[in-house]
Image (tube, rainbow, N blue to C red; front, side, top):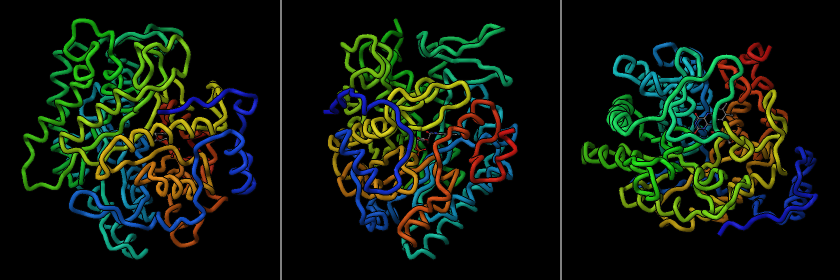
Length: 463
Ligand SMILES: Cc1cc2nc3c(=O)[nH]c(=O)nc-3n(C[C@H](O)[C@H](O)[C@H](O)COP(=O)(O)O)c2cc1C
């Protein structure tokens, strides 16, 4: 069970100030946290069996929306360049960013969107990424091939129509409502009939991802978007997609998986997966992975009974790889991506960032220990640890908390981090993410996202 860290004056916010790994180690000890450090990082180079193949090493790039697609959703030159940077990194697995499949479910007019019309552009992106990724892996001495996964998403509450917020919600809950001063936000609670239609469109998009050449598709279930919000829809009265039963709240996800598996060619190696927020900290009855008797307090106490039950159901349906995340970054971003500086106008984290990291790793550990060994678990939220993150990645894998470590913001700031780890044994301190939230700020402003600190391409977006 996930233990609550006792509140003390030490547990309040403190920015990153660790001049050495041992200083970081001392802070972890002082706070009584479960953040394992392994100075021997050789485990990161070890392959990992996944079904009938091997994943070449233990590093992955997490999905990071670039919002640089063309109006029709196809990848632009900038999108292609971003994936070339990732492909040239040495990671074993690239998890392509949240990609829409219907206009109404887009969170930004420049979000990627896969359709029959632009399939060829996705095919070219996949091919180019795969070629370079495999070549880089080979140059680094890895014998197995890379994996490319497309994250498919409906933005739900965070959807936009003609650049204006147009929330498509599973239920009403005031703390999640988007604030806007002048005009009233339009939007709606989605009906069961509309969810049924989305189910079919989502399945079609999975087959488009397969045709485009991806190895797998992620039915995104994290960060407060449509499927993730439905998991918390305890108070969706009179709906087949909500109420007290987990199977009803998870119906959209489960139906998409079952029906896609039925439609899949038996001989195909194409696989399904999901990135899931196993806990969002929102008090019951609006939260997921929380205690029922949690009161109004945020973050609500953890109870992973339902997430574990859901992941066991996914295992029964043949899912053998999942990506664990937590929180809804539109609501309380420090749960998902611990940081030192908030976005403009945002809140300072309510706790020490190491406590936020400890929470997500401990949640992941509980999930991992509840699953059979052949369920591959990808862990999240390492970038905050900067030049030390390789040691924590190795620690998490050695302690069997995760199988593979995914990096998000670090891939924006320093896409060469895997090569640095594999060839120099450490991530270059001068190139790391500094958790300044500028990339999230660009996202909030509807601009192309990237690292304004380390990549000159994005500096002008920050003016
Ligand atoms: C600008 C930005 C875009 C993101 N886009 C996605 C996305 O498309 N899909 C997703 O699941 N998570 C997304 N995330 C969350 C990251 O994948 C990751 O979970 C988070 O940043 C914590 O990991 P890190 O500490 O390695 O950055 C995004 C985060 C940021 C800051």
